[in-house]
Length: 226
Image 1: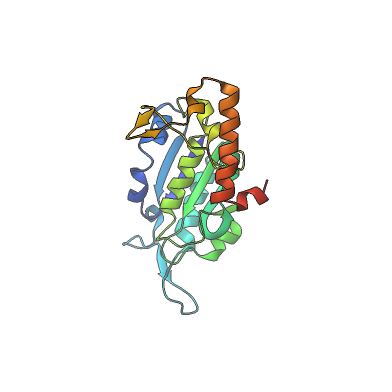
Image 2: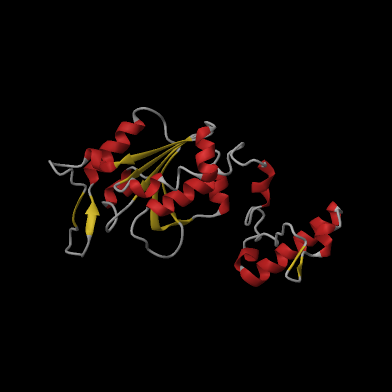
């Protein structure tokens, strides 16, 4: 899989996508992540990538031409299954979205910054808009890193135990049950006896019961979507 991320602040993405599961997946050759600086195509001697907003609103807007030229250069080299724009008004990013995107071969993730990007890019080049929540951050870089991480960990071989991703929260529409590790007792706090029983059927039933109970308590809206 190949992920190309377009940004005006590449430094924000270099560390999050170089370590842990994502970093190991890159080293294994399971995924290729390229971070592109849009300023490469900035205009004039100062490589300008933004300008004032038509209509007099406050804030700077990312210009059409630098983004258009960079996407055009990449698209001339390969087909992209999706060109994604990280936007607070896009579709909500979910585990199902991550599952779907992890099956693709090539994607572009475009990070907005400042006031956003010229809407003509969204109208004519972007194929999908994704939001990580109903709030606004300084740019699309951190949301893009979140999306990339969520996708990469689903690629076969990225996790040491591939079945681990199957029991993550939201894979079955529920939050995960509680998890514990050694020691079995600490400070008088004990691991539930059922998890020490060695009976897979009983343990699975307990986990299912806990996942449902926690979902009802913490995220009841998920049950309406099942």
